[in-house]
Amino acid sequence: MNLLVAAIALASYILPTHSESITVTDENQGTPYGVDCTFPIHYKSLRCGNLLGDRKKIYEDYMQGCYDAFDREICEDYEDDRIAMSLRQPSGMVNYTSTGFKKIRAPEALFKLLKDHWDRNNHLKKQEKWGRGNVYVNHWASPTYMVSVEDSTLPGGGYELKDAIWEAARPVIEEWTGMEQQPSSLYGIRVYTEGAILSPHADRLPLVSSCIVNVAQDVDEDWILEVFDREGNSVNVTMEPGDMVLVSFPTRMERLVDNHNHYAID
Image (cartoon, rainbow, N blue to C red; front, side, top):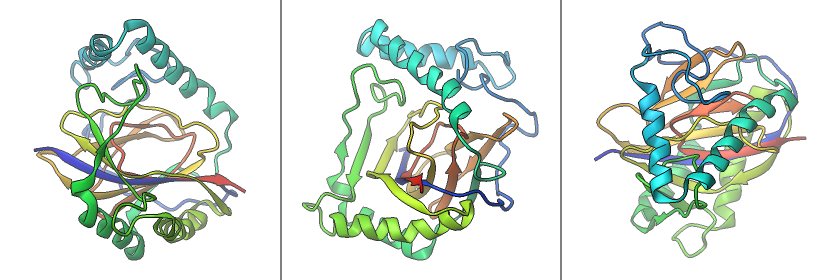
């Protein structure tokens, strides 16, 4: 069984500062590549041939799955919007860090809050309902599930837990970005199932700074988080339980998300 359990996304408003070095795993064995190689980001025509295998077929199969499950026109509308946002959103953003992303170990207090909630409630996870034709994840083939952190009907859940998670994550993001953070979005612990693909995307405003936490996983091989640096080069990041990736947009992400916390900049 392949199962990846992700945590929250925090979004906030921030101030500029320096960024420390990041820890990454280079899964493409040193061959540099940029956007529109693994999956369409700026244009639907992939431009790297078979450098990374037959990515064109993977994309075509992905979209065909949406067409079969819903309707070609509505799937294309969602896809056009995703690509348009990837082009539009970065141009209106400010770079608050030098790299745009950083991998660290999650603070113990933060990880304990998430892991305890997952251990108590993972058997109560609920399948997520995505919009008809939504192409941000291939939910028609690989359903995603959610363990809400604000659902007071779950043991230990509710707004007290949500606030505790915010406060445990906030100092890390504020130190990294050098700016005060205002929470914007925190939805819970998401479960990605075998075959799941999260399309590369630029988050909507005001989701400016985020953190991703790998809460748990049961996988046959690593699920890679692909991000793009300030020069447009791809960097592949491998996460294990307890790892935390900080993201300050307009860095784009693809293929894997765990727990998400989003903040807006004050």
